[in-house]
Length: 284
Image (cartoon, rainbow, N blue to C red; front, top):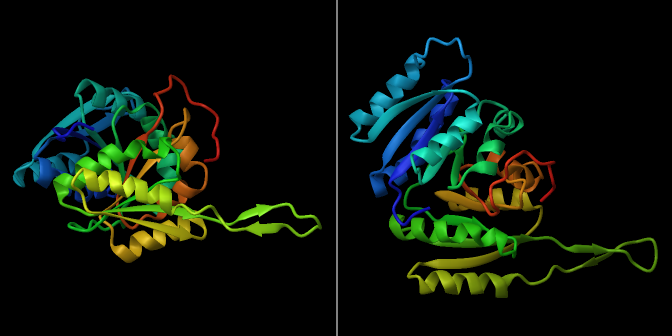
């Protein structure tokens, strides 16, 4: 993400649920006044090439709200066209919504978001219809102690500075279960993550941001979601891991549950180079 967000690519599929992405991008729109391309992809080659009426209406509503928005129509495979459009237009952010009762299931199992993030060269903002956008609230960034998880930090730093938001750096840890001398396993306390987290906070503070560190213990997804809910966070930020992109972090367990249930929008960045073809799902 550049220092300034000049272009946002918003993907809609014609459903009311997909339009929940608009409230999620509004803090970015207010802060940066970017160009917003509203993308609709025709999957049927015999389609009339006329966008659903509600998409044209949504784009028109943005323009009436003084947003520099326009409609982009393409035909092909949605994920491929989303990534291609973002690359050609030099978008700084891709925004998508999860769908319906199944939350992230339709989006992820349908491979659209998985393929988008696997190949996207910019961050992807994912939200769901019931998510609430709290402006002027903290940005929560979830780290796991690895350098790859820190790939999201430059984005967090730029956004927090522009939005005037505090940053809460979180790591969820769990006890280590090791085999014991007898049949019963030995439960060892987790390694103290605070020295690492405080180091990250110092870096953010050196950049002029207000930041704090917190180590939480418990089931990773549920614990993180509870914290985001309790703090009314404006945004949850995470990095995906490895060559499998979204599949690795989301189709594992933690972030899959996070995106499916997150009470706020989630900003994701792939921390490895884009791949040319889908890979097998790995557990984060």
